[in-house]
Image: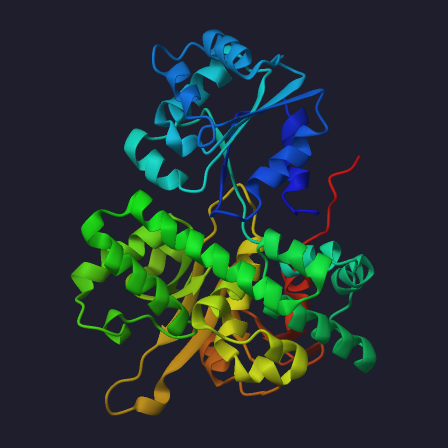
Amino acid sequence: MYRAIEPYFASWRTSAYRKPIILHGARQVGKTFTVRKLGATFDNFVEANFEEAPYLKDIFKSDLKAARIIRDLSLALKVEIIPGKTLLFLDEIQKVPEAIIALRYLYEELPTLHVIAAGSLLNFAIEKVGVPVGRVDFLYLYPMSWIEFLIATGNEIICKAILDHDINMAESDIVHEKILKLLCEYFAIGGMPEVVNCWINTHDPYTCARLQQSIINSYRQDFHKYARDQQIKYVEVVFAGVAQQMGRKFQFKNIAGEYRKRELAPALDLLINACVIHKIQHTSANGLPLGAEANDEKFKLIMLDIGLAQALLGLDLGDWFLNGTPEFINKGNLVEAFVGQELHAYADPHIKNSLYFWLREAEAKHRSSTAEVDYIVQKKAAVVPIEVKSGKGAGMKSMRLFLDSHPKSTYGIRYSTNNYSVYNQINSYPLYAIPLSLDWQYDTGSP
């Protein structure tokens, strides 16, 4: 399956300024598959998985001299490791923190060796040992985007039609409805590669739903790996509570049960560190960078994948196939989460992407003056507000208030089930055209 990160790997491979890569991402988003696919293009691919082969950790105990490490790995795995010809993949590297430190010496002493490290819970290991600053590059991988889903399911022509469309022209009704129907499939299946592959092979939403539940269970089994025993129950309730509060400002008090914020807040931080939850921070959005005016006390949360969110909520995926586009109205919170998932997917993978929203809370005597813009993004040097409409509704009061109060923002973006249009500072895109609105380009990485 094609992943949009592949061109970045291709560029890295030939770069004169290449450093070892640390590939970040939650469990089962496709890190290992993607690196193995890249490895198939090398003369030699060597994979050292520290979870499957824990004995390999002893190689990093005595010293961190690059030549000795490579020699011992070669002997232990019974395969040659040749700088310039071999891709060395250190998988589940969080199991051996010393191996993270060793990346510095592999870069300094064997600069022609291609090295990629990955792991599902990397942030926790990095917190303990740090990271070789200036000696490694980072790449971030998320679940499969809508565009990647289209390509995987044999709809590359539709993918290119979306990316080449002129926003000033409406799409034909028949094509518009066809693409929305395909988008319903993506909403049901989500972007976890194993689930997408299951859908391609079976076209059975209930088999896919069971696989989503299996992934949810694997995330739960990970809790004990990064949470202390007394924290696990709090991690569990926050994990369930996030899906229930998607689409609105998160409040610990809305989690069912007698819990206090000081018990739940650390649990939420653990889930964010594990990359299974994403935070959307409030920003005043008066200028760049957006994070300079972020408010840590006001935030929303989404799960990493809308398919998994529905599995956690126990929703019936069959509704997307039986009811079609009306489900976008019925499940508005998922539509907003989908947009957040897409914004991550098309961001520069070299940078840890952050999501923001804008909120003007009403005073007690003026409740009607509350306004909220779902997302705020940076496009080049511009601050751009984004409104998400789950149906065809045209109300844009919050967007208007934002544009009126932020003179540096000259236009806004609306995503909905409506067709393309441009009117009065609002660029309207169908939900399926988010990558077009972000000027994202489909690149196979081929010469």
